[in-house]
Length: 164
Image (cartoon, rainbow, N blue to C red; front, side):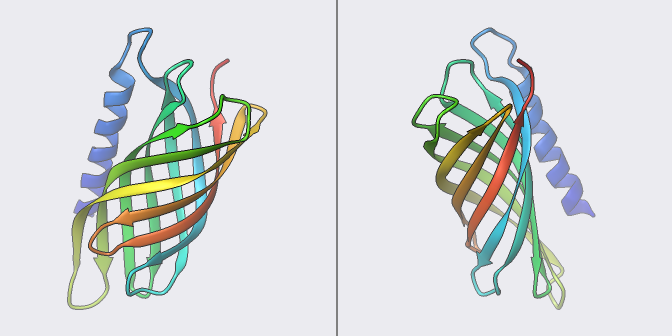
């Protein structure tokens, strides 16, 4: 339970830092979304992964901040992963566009067996394609988490845009 408390605190701090910016040139909250896909951790069979994210953007910019959280479980190993990513899309909003990004995250592992659990700091690298929708965007993404238990994943997701 302590792991989830730490992870929640990290996520709240990251979201608070993004929301604290108030100038006209700051990033502002623009949407929420989720992803689902296939993940292959090192030395563990592949499994499904679920994640949720918030999205912040600066009006007229192609840079987006996306704090989020992911979860997977397989072969008596689970990972709860709060993370903070940034990505850049190459074409304007409203068009199909490739994107690339990176970020940082914490991995809170739980193992059934002689080791109770551990945490690990990691880096994320990813890229994909965004598809515009009406008040949404859909995306396909390939991602690699650089941690002690490296994780390669292929995901599909959607972000629901808020506001005008």
